[in-house]
Length: 96
Image (cartoon, rainbow, N blue to C red; front, side, top):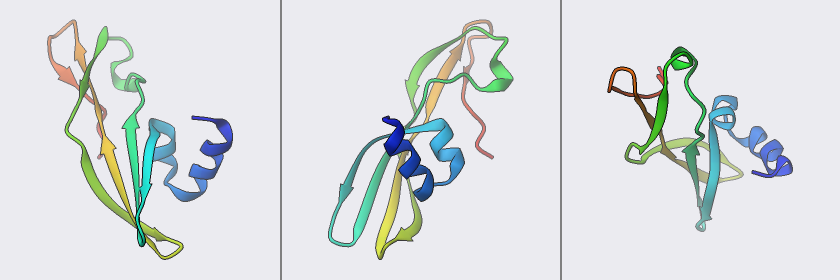
């Protein structure tokens, strides 16, 4: 994402979203703004010592966010998953 857009997105979305997701597209209806976000391929810190390989994404989820300038805002979030090649387990970032 271009730096100028990233600075603008930081004003609109929570910081954690900007740090770990990229805005891939958006749609604007008359009163609804849809933002499509995909998790970037950065290894979760608790698995930095493990050998991980990206293994695709979970199904997209939709979260309603706070309105922006009278528009309802929906975040369409796609989370990444990795295969821990040492254990054979699928791992992902814990968002709790």
